[in-house]
Length: 370
Ligand SMILES: *Cc1c(COP(=O)(O)O)cnc(C)c1O
Image (cartoon, rainbow, N blue to C red; front, side):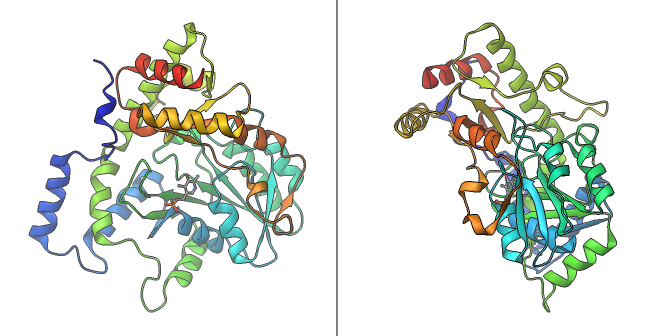
């Protein structure tokens, strides 16, 4: 079957039938307008089961989830929070909002993965937490970070906004809190929304104190929760389908001479699922690395051409050291790998990763990028 781009951008994770079913149920129950109720409770329960966590705090966005997790971990004004210099900006902004100091460390060369050795070297007596994301299908080295966190008595916060349902075997789920996003472009989406999972009663209680102001200050609504429940139930199946599409693309790319490289590790290439049948790589966006940084006009041309051909190709994150005044963060060592990746990386949105003609998509990418 040929990949029909005219079908884009229908990227809703629920079919029209599924949506009709959710809305029919909402109309029949007539409870969707309540402040809280059974949908939020059911979603919390499903997420606690998925993450084997004692507590689930539903909230209004992944960004707010990061702020809550930082506050839950006891991060205060004057503390330091270590994070990768290549990451989404929310972690930097939330840390600064609390009055704490972001400490940026580099990533591994040509990988959106924090350099754990640099994390160890960046710890000071002010450090309170490590905040780390699983980005673009690449898992963060949580085991190594846990060891550092234990040795230095730090909290480890996992930003899983891009990787809901990532195999526990791969994620080595050992963080103190996991943050999820249900934003409009994400794999689980209700347009807006987020959640924090933790098994620490202290973290959960601190977040509760922060959110409860006579009413929930940063809530998720029943309507949002109702739309997320069926998505969570099909999440693993969809994650596997996306992983299979990526494997298909890589198998095709293997023999061809492509003007780009898809950043997927060999381990992931060889193994699609873990022992429990869960995806070992979760693709919110697929990372496409160019051999060198395009100049601004070239970049503009690439993005324009992608748009014309209905390929949802977008820019990578900016390196965080370029997003903030120098006085508002500390750079721990060189951040060259982060700026190099930010300059050379493009991201393909997951809406095309459920199609079954990987070859066609690859060819379109090759045309755009050559
Ligand atoms: C999207 C995203 C967030 C923020 O989530 P929102 O729900 O949009 O606030 C945080 N971290 C990462 C890595 C993300 O991709």
